[in-house]
Image: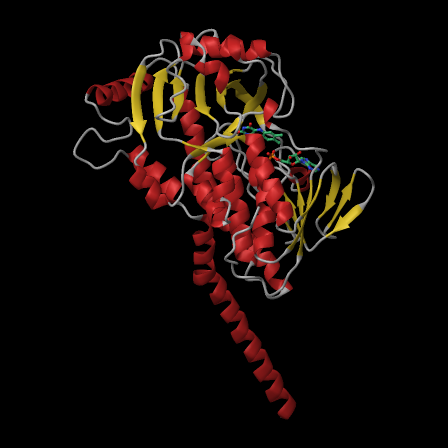
Length: 463
Ligand SMILES: Cc1cc2nc3c(=O)[nH]c(=O)nc-3n(C[C@H](O)[C@H](O)[C@H](O)COP(=O)(O)OP(=O)(O)OC[C@H]3O[C@@H](n4cnc5c(N)ncnc54)[C@H](O)[C@@H]3O)c2cc1C
């Protein structure tokens, strides 16, 4: 549990950050801020973090893994995660393999990251252990009941209050931080997403599922259907599972990531599908059901006091199960900490928070739009678009091409170019670039102003 041995630039002015919420975004942000020398306390309502036995999987793209590698967590990640090598694109109803894409190693080398899969709980525990090892105070069993950004104080359910220099709202969608910022609750969902897992040991011994677990070519599956879709991938770790996200119509399920929903809801979607999915539905024992809300953009991430900011799901809700869900949450912490590594005086705090908002909103809105598009693409109703999607994939498959490869002379498809751009993004570099282009300039401008003031007062005194 070592934080990156090569220390990053340290802040000249260490301040106190209070993070409400110890999910992925809160814990990653705690590590990032500790790396640059700030004091951090995380307040998490859960008394204990979930363990693997009953949790779902997450996909971590290169833009996320490269941050963790940079923080010195590569070896720990290797223990809990497995590297993705290929994707199979199939039809839900018939199981037809429409296409296949084998990831190009060169692309990942360029991105300086890896595309990896793990259990959500393993990843969160990894961040929790490292937040503590880095010197952050993480207080479990501490629900926050109110936040006063002007006084920079939060009140706990116990009645205690905690004060800080900056409050970070990392308590997810619909949390108390969003209400302090007057953010409307999300609009009712047109789709549900079920998250479940089936143990590897069960799958490899099942004659109907021999094509699901591929030891030699770690494969993610994407099944397209009419109003429903399934994503499936193996998790890494000592107790691997096949994790699934199953999108289907709203059917009255009331649940969240922590609460189980009756398994019939998940099975009712999978029962309409090809035999392998039906079988996986029978083998799944538990499920969580998360609404896929109509996403509205959160315009203000920084409170008018200039002392509170939102991040993760609280700032930029994204459809559950998206590839970039956890990645955006962790990029946030990396960017915020990079900006605050330049802190020299209190009057910079507000401008760093607004710089964070500006930098991250651009990135998040384009990624989220893309992720919403992927859910639509997978669940297209029968018609022109669905036929075009299937036919172009079949044509490439029959020509022996990768699914995301261009079928004409151009080097790559627009989809592949976009994926490479999203994966290639380096959150910490972006924050460094902001500092070089704008941050330093502002400091210099302030320096000039300060010098002018000194000169004027000297002049006044002598005259
Ligand atoms: C328990 C859990 C399990 C999940 N499992 C999966 C999964 O298997 N696969 C997947 O793809 N995604 C999963 N997710 C969702 C995923 O982690 C997030 O969508 C994403 O990573 C962004 O995380 P976040 O930290 O911004 O928000 P969240 O993950 O929502 O974390 C917010 C945290 O804030 C805490 N909190 C909320 N209100 C308060 C309060 N008043 N006081 C103190 N603490 C508070 C919550 O307990 C939670 O830990 C899960 C989320 C949770 C909370």
